[in-house]
Amino acid sequence: MRKLFLMLAFIATSLFTANAQVNGFNNVLFAQGSEKVAGVYTGKIIHAYMNKKKDVAYRFQDYVNFELVDRGGGMYALRGILEFQAGPAKHEIDFSDERVTLNTDANGNIISATGKGHIRVSVWKQDWVNSDFTVTVPVGTSYARDGVLNLRLECDVVGGVLGKPYKAIFEFNGNK
Image (cartoon, rainbow, N blue to C red; front, top):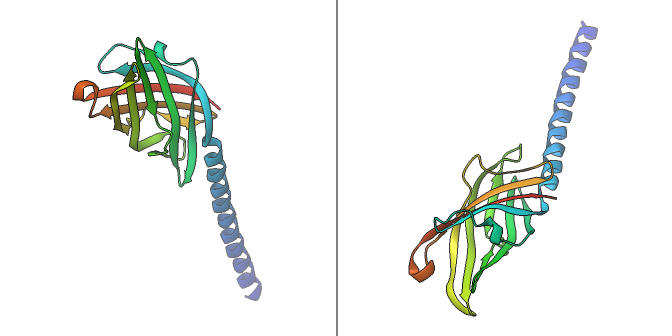
């Protein structure tokens, strides 16, 4: 009877220890995934639509950098600046203050985003637009995994050109 009790105790202890090791292993994997997602991604704006105009991605600089800053728990802050010139109008779309937060699932899919960016449009050094805007990322459109960031940002600018609101959509694809 004593041998049976010791054998059952040994089996139970082994099972609990194995479960603890598996759970610890999963936590390590998640932490490594976070480190792999955070970082600087260099790439291009592959599509850009501003104020219902056709694709204006060709106006952006050849390469753009976006950085994902790890906030823990699958949350990342977005950092980056987009600039382009359209005739006399210089456009600067600024995400450098880390006010946009992206939430990811365990597979690196970006499942939500909240926050604000800032846009400044100046013509001959006079500001035409200088305002904050809200940022969203539609579910199922963006991910950060395997060293690749594919990001679709939808920006609603309230105080746009001549006070009229408009929507801007940017799609970025880059690598670490």
